[in-house]
Length: 469
Image 1 (spheres, one colour):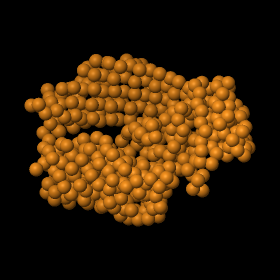
Image 2 (tube, rainbow, N blue to C red; image 1 turned 45 degrees about the horizontal axis):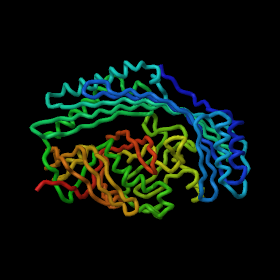
Image 3 (cartoon, rainbow, N blue to C red; image 1 turned 90 degrees about the horizontal axis):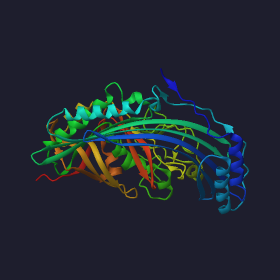
Image 4 (cartoon, helix red, strand yellow; image 1 turned 60 degrees about the vertical axis):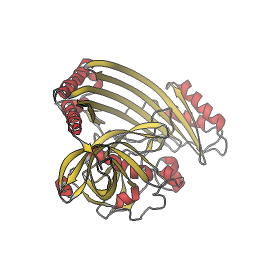
């Protein structure tokens, strides 16, 4: 049976309104109150033993007053009236200036996005431990060269309520589940690692019916395949980027550059490029916080703005930046629902949700068959991007050589080196095999869940940094 969780506010609207009045008692143009209650469970298996079981919960609130471009912020543990008043008084003691009146709060329509078939909290911990043991056994059954298996399971529920001085009063109920499997294979002194994840804004049903075991199988396959890898080639060549996790390349090289705080500081190569052609006309890209079941999906952002599907590149032109309320106010536009924060202890800042290149019409095989000699980057091991210049370096965790239009040898030690605007402009084909993957994005000392995705994408020319001679 599928259950849709109602988003029940954590506090009454009357209390929220009193707290906002108190926060603005000495002045300020805008105030908001962010209340949060979260709980979670994590388990891990290492060397076939359940090594870690962590369970936790907390509740608290953050109060913010904005005056000009300055934000005053305080947070407290607890959601009692005295707790909230203490946070409001702390902020009010710092803020000075003309006072804005608090508008009467109106409850926003609750629009639960996610249907939870099996609430993780209803599943015994032993069943979750069995799931990890199944991952361990599946990975080890791939062969005697499997030397080490680690797997982890995490679930969390996060209820939030947001009220602000402009009358918004909204709540959200977020349940997430994530599984990760890392496999180490060893042969004749060579050691390689395979890593695979499965996650979503979903219930326990996400990891059932063999899904966990399939995740372990993929991790094993990657590790064993890379054992036979040759040194990666070096030089400029066509690069086919794999679907799913390949989207992290777009997330890093383009998505961050479209976040409005970078734009307003002039610290992005996309500043001033709204409406400019930066890619071929066939390229469409989105940030979508409402994709059902995806890892970066929420009903509202952490400022109470309903999440939305934002076209960031349409027909190759930059069409929108990603805004929270403060940066949107400065540019005189509406927030795109991208004000996110790690917890009630943090200020919201513009962040991506689920960012992806829309599927094209090509096939992955077609993209590869047209390449005489090139590189196939399936997944990445992290990288660095200078948002001011757009220059990037990414490590490739799984890559292959393309020869004569076919994928031939696995390669190790590859990096992709380039500039984001040049790479974006050289995407000459996008495949239809769209897939999303999960990850955590770090920015400003905060870590939030994000989704990345795409079908296979071909970049006409990119520099591959390898060690082959």
